[in-house]
Length: 74
Image (cartoon, rainbow, N blue to C red; front, side):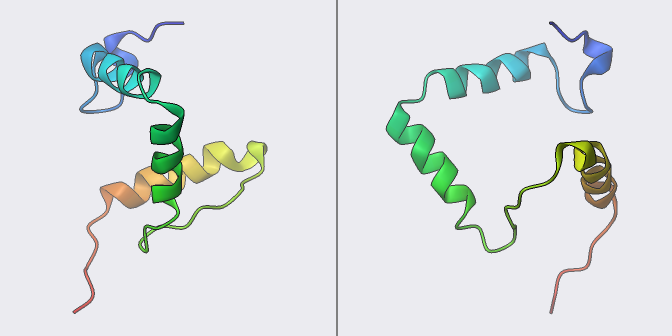
């Protein structure tokens, strides 16, 4: 299935999607593992399992959060 331009999130287009796909398709197994492990070492995020039926709600919360101005701790 191919998305048309109007279905991409803001700032995304076909070229950007293809670039991301190429990045992941060209990774070695070791590079993919390193990417996965790096996600767990970021102190500003948390990895967690979410029941599939809650994924749309969680995505919406993340989207709304990303659009709000946030204060950084002093």
